[in-house]
Structures are given as C-alpha cells and as structure tokens.
Length: 123
Image 1 (cartoon, rainbow, N blue to C red):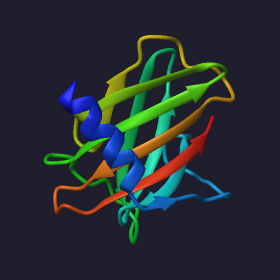
Image 2: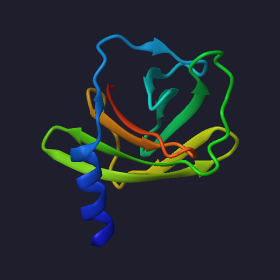
Image 3: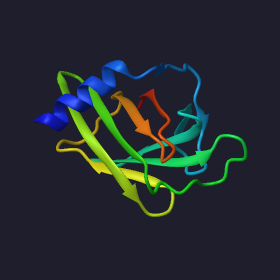
Image 4: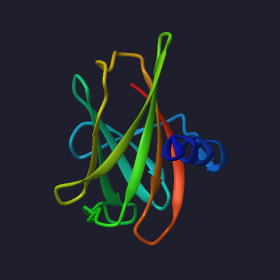
C-alpha cells in the first residue's frame, strides 16, 4: 500500500513531457524523449517493454539502476504496472489484463543518475 501511494505521488508530481509527435524506435515501437533518454514503448498482449537509448547517438543504454512504472488507461479501466530492468537496455512489466488498441500509457521513469521524467504514449 505504501508503494502504491508513493507511485501515485510520483506520477502527480513528475514534470510531464507530453509530445504530439512520436519517433519510430529501432524495434518499431513509439519513441519519446524523457528524462534525457529516448524511451521506446513496445507492448504485447499483457507485457509492457520500454527500451532505453541515448538521445544523442541512438545507442542502447544499460538499464541497471533504472526504475519505472506505467499507468495503463483504456476504456473504463486503469492499472499501474511496475517496470524492472530486463536484459541489456529494457524495463519490463506485466499487466493483469490485456492491453487494448487505443490505450493511453503514461510512463514514469528514473535513470540510474537520479533524473526522472514522464511521457504519455497513445497506443
């Protein structure tokens, strides 16, 4: 419960980055600049993956020491999913319900250097 309250407070207090134009990421996902890095969103049925790249040169960045969460909002449902480092340059988490087309996904991310930010994706 304490973690959920902390996450909600973080989501409300983070400085948002709302962009209207997405770049296409190296893996075909939507990509936005957030917290000084490029974050590429990929989703499967219930899995959210954020791939992290250097905003200057496009090279993958190791996600050791990163933390993040996404707020998935679609239809009448909302779900918060905690993301954990996975592989070389990814953060990953699993939703309880399938992620539908047209869903809005709000990412809150904190880098290993302590820089944080927020980005909003529309699937």
